[in-house]
Amino acid sequence: DVQMTQSPSSLSASVGDRVTITCRASQSITHYLNWYQQKAGKAPKLLIYAASNLQSGVPSRFSGSGSGTDFILTISSLQLEDVATYYCQQSFTIPLTFGGGTKVEIK
Amino acid sequence: QVQLQESGPGLVKPSQTLSLTCTVSGGSISSGDYYWSWIRQPAGKGLESIGRIYTSGSTNYNPSLKSRVTITVDTSKNQFSLKLTSVTATDTAIYYCARGRGYSGEELDCWGQGTLVTVSS
Image 1 (spheres, rainbow over the protein chains, first blue to last red):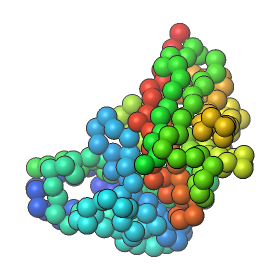
Image 2: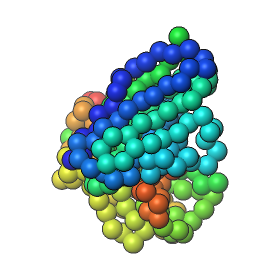
Image 3: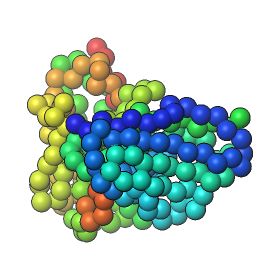
Image 4: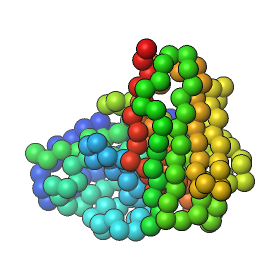
């Protein structure tokens, strides 16, 4: 299985801050990396697909970059409604695997 | 707007079979290049993929669960289903069904709200 490692596991930032979350794959997954946002008690929601493509309806403050084994999710200006846990997921090979999650809180 | 809804028993006894159904509304399960997936999440933990099915009937399962999992699709009812046999307490989780975009990067673009299944006697 491809192991996905996210860091940090949690972070606290102020409204308006730039936030970055990293995700590393145990082998190259080319661009097959997706990011999801999960708010408390809700299902995950697709934010970014194929490493850098913004899902329809997702605010433009979210962006993704990277290829191969190293990927980054950036929130350019953190908002109150961005409080959630963020997961990366590789779709390069079966089984689909997820990172352990990054919990984002407001300072 | 496609919507997915999980249904099934919320309580299953150890050693029995967990059975869930996902009903797709707002679109045909057979249209487009999509696959249909099950994912689970134990309370307070991360996400684990269980497996997926294409409307052709082709399936892929997580090797860690493969011996216990069966996913089927019923296009006439616009549903797909999960069976997990010989369950134990470690199978207690929120179970999500989701749609994957096979024409893109295989990402999961639409999710059900999830259903909690508890394994307990």
